[in-house]
Length: 603
Image 1 (cartoon, rainbow, N blue to C red):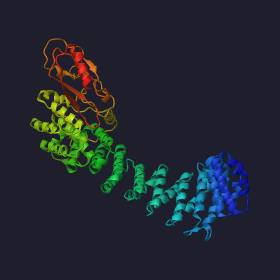
Image 2 (cartoon, rainbow, N blue to C red):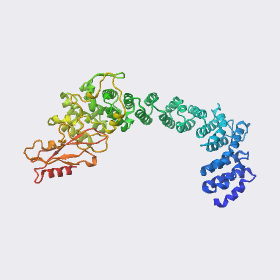
Image 3 (cartoon, helix red, strand yellow):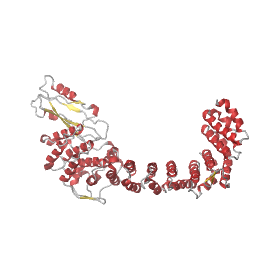
Image 4 (cartoon, rainbow, N blue to C red):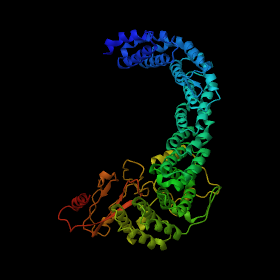
């Protein structure tokens, strides 16, 4: 139908009736939108339409030009020769007198002015000569001091869009960004919103000019309107760099205290991202993240907690500062889940450092008695509102402390572990049973070996190689303080890194390169006989859970129980799990095959 009617539309465009001319031009816009290959039939009429002085016809003509340029960008070259006519038409509007039919709040036809600027923006993109022609007009508009009216703001906004889109000078771009900065201080939320959206697009063009409005952007983050707050926060995250990260994070921390819970999650995510990417040093990153965990830990994603753990484990000199800071923060606030998870991990891994005094230029901490450490853990696990994830972390911290605290506290640790055996969540029950079995006196010698410090993950190793940590002033917290009286942590350990996704192979011990770690060693600890055991064979009992391979071993006589030590890769717990399984009556066939069948049935 469009192909059949386009000739009639062309005739109506040439009509002397201005109303018909306007309507026919708008019909041409819709024909081009439906049948783009007919653009040539109407593009040749644009120049004659621009000669009309009627505002309605001019609005329709500019709409036709925008549609033509959208369908076929090659017409930009042909239309650029009309730029002087467009500029002349716009200046006539600026200097024109009062016209009741087109006047809006003292501005002569702002709709037509915005349409002209829109076409100029399309024609000036990626063309220095065309941009130079419209320089004077844009400068005149950007210098307009009257920006209190909605009509004027609409023209200024389109002027700013045109300035940042064409090949304008740095001074003109600064003028355009200053217009948007004034909009941010406007009381109208719609005006501020459009300014924020445009600033997010132009921050890469002139970072310094946008940076000057940082204070106004921070004020927008404090607004009540959620769209304004989120838009300002997104823009603020684009302004963060190593030079201003301290001041911006400080301001956001002040805002997060009074922010509503829905917005605290966005603020916390922005702070964590900024500290991870632009932290000037490790000490500041640790302190800033712990502060976020203290104020909004329940809204911090687990990945940020894990990233902080990576940073700390890669910086041994910061371990003492971190664990003391985490403990002090935990004493003040037990309601933030992210803080509790982080503090439980720190206490479990570096709890022995709490027993030493610590002092530096930002923190003075007295030694913490074991009773206090166990008391705060007891408060957490005995709270009925404590989540299962936190209970897992707390139980792991307790079993870790069993080799770090004096022997007289083992009984209390065991009582706390056993107290969780009846918790309705099976994961907590299982962990409690496993750790209670590991607390048995017959595993005293092997408990310290099983609970060795977790080795550095791949990410932590990369951080350790690529970032030099800030040393403490008094030297407290060096590598030798991490596990006192145990020497260096062996690279071979039953505890694998929870942050890696690939299973680790069985690692040989340093003291005997030919002897691998035998997970089922206790199965046959009470068996007699001189029969030479068969070579160890690896059995993957927990393939679905990506566990480490478990070597099996044969023997000549059965035992009453089987002890399995299994290191589990989990995002909620750092531990070696222990299984106590009853053995069947003496097998009638090969003991190795019988045991293997039993274990496979259990799994």
